[in-house]
Image 1 (cartoon, rainbow, N blue to C red):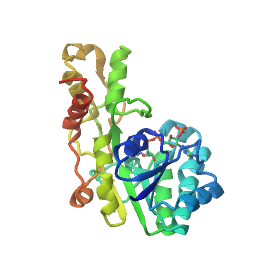
Image 2 (tube, rainbow, N blue to C red):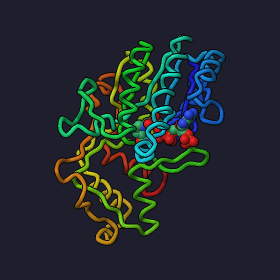
Image 3 (tube, helix red, strand yellow):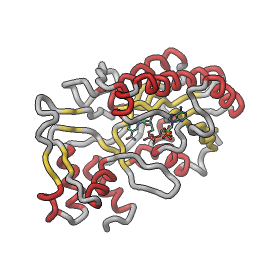
Length: 288
Ligand SMILES: NC(=O)c1ccc[n+]([C@@H]2O[C@H](COP(=O)([O-])OP(=O)(O)OC[C@H]3O[C@@H](n4cnc5c(N)ncnc54)[C@H](OP(=O)(O)O)[C@@H]3O)[C@@H](O)[C@H]2O)c1
């Protein structure tokens, strides 16, 4: 069995990944309590002892506003921490997956869907951190997959962390009777988290390099929220609960969609966001 070490192992993505592959891989799940990866010596000791075949470095501060407000903390965790993990991976001959983000393209005003080799222009500290870390890591080890994720969604599960995705955001706002404000000028690929997870075994067999991983989507954020509300059978509530954002992205669309052809050619598959939200709602028994 391949030995896989996870950082950020208790987060939204890795808590589901470890469970999904529990019979296929041996895991060392680490998160802040077990291993603070900003401590280079601790990382070296942990990797040196476990000797993983692959390290999936998912640990990060992924909250954009927090990173903008605390750039030093964000850099220490998102960049310096990733470097610590990469140096240990190189030293102990582990391969590494670095999870990056579509947000490296947040400042690009045209060119979507973006390919792996397109020049990325981030305009948030989080996006800058991810892009800087990608560059540093490429110089540290060759046995590296850089996996740039689109935004993901899922639903809460016992013992697993949740993060904000389009589906859970919409459901919680409906329950709390909050108005949902969404833009017709914002476009993102939004992937069902379990589809990205299911593609990881294929990623591990693919040549090292950078990959765009996630769903394609031809609909605006507004249209996807409207679609979710209709799927829930609540279309009569639409006029009260969903409002169009008339402030953001009027000059030009926010469009961070990724071209995932390279991953698809390597055998990875995703359902388009439109159908994927329905699959998720059905899998969790929210709708029939
Ligand atoms: N979720 C998405 O839609 C999405 C989209 C694109 C890219 N990504 C990337 O995918 C990866 C996983 O995302 P996620 O949604 O699973 O994030 P998450 O739920 O926030 O998980 C990240 C985990 O890393 C931990 N962590 C932070 N600093 C650490 C440190 N110094 N040492 C050890 N652990 C630390 C966090 O602990 P605390 O919670 O206690 O800080 C958290 O448990 C991240 O790299 C993220 O940037 C996610």
